[in-house]
Amino acid sequence: MHAIRLHAFGPAENLVHERVEDPRPGPGQVRIAVRAAGVHLLDTALREGAQGPLPEPPRLPTIPGREVAGVVESLGDGVAALWLGKRVVAHLGFAPGGYAELAVTDVDRVHEIPGNLDFAEAVAMIGTGRTTMGILQFAELGPDSVALVPAAAGGIGTLLVQYAKNAGATVVGLAGGPAKTALVEANGADLAVDYRDPAWPDKVRAHLGGDKVTVVFDGVGGDVAREALALLAPGGRHLVFGWSADGIQDGAPHLVDGVSEQVLGTVMMQKAGGPNPVRTLELRALAEAAAGRLTPAVQRFPLAEAAAAHRALETRGTTGKVVLEP
Image 1 (tube, helix red, strand yellow):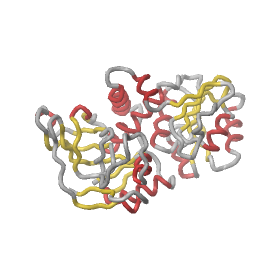
Image 2: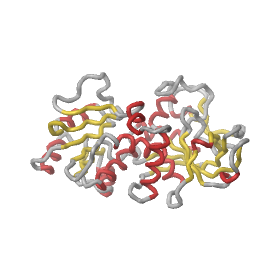
Image 3: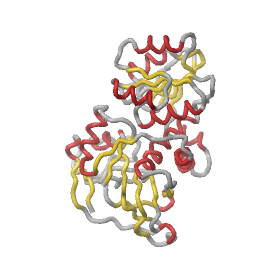
Image 4: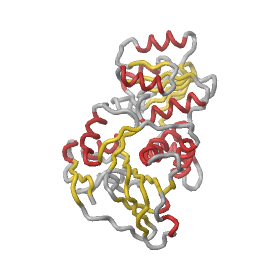
């Protein structure tokens, strides 16, 4: 098969498209003929040698990627024959191997793809959608809510805007540049504002009149987050799930009057509950997409152009979920 391999930590150019040996499914595993592989901002940090949430940095050489969708074409011992030929999606957990024509994973990680989703959309929901469902557990959205979504043209931001609108909330979406703000407006936001305009907070205030923001979905941090918090109503909620723009990472209080929560990791899983909270959130995400309530935005790259996909992510040149297609 062909795959993207990383032989040395460093820039995107270190991602090499090459032929490698086909993986074999072990007991309890399936092999998937990959039709779409998810690319995450975390992948760019791991490529440079960061450990991130993993137990240790990736061991080289490695095939990056932890989200795949495709067709089951081989079964390991103990796997029911009914899985053969099914359209499936899976998050590989801490195991790499997604940027490839074939990927192996435990059958317990696999979900059958609802018939109305394509492979790229399914990949978006198994990772980005799962995270979105986890964040929304803390949002308490309703018709009286005013939600502010920085990075609203991104994968998570797109889904947050849709979900908040479905809940009846007023939604303000921030994005960088006219092309992205147009996408945010088309996605249903009541107001789409370019955060690169120094006057963006005044535009939000003018649009809201006497209302104030009740929840800030903060995956950005930095100056945008600080300005967004100035718009937050007393007792409002600041939900932190990332720091892509540098951000407030020192654990210092974010608010004078309100609730600020970091909602990733164990906090999210504890809230989801159940014997397998990760799977619980994955099922919720796929169900929302299958019902048509959430539609992920996807930007597609050929597998061989993984380096270009990484560069685009790192320079904020993408919209929606980035997906590689073999």
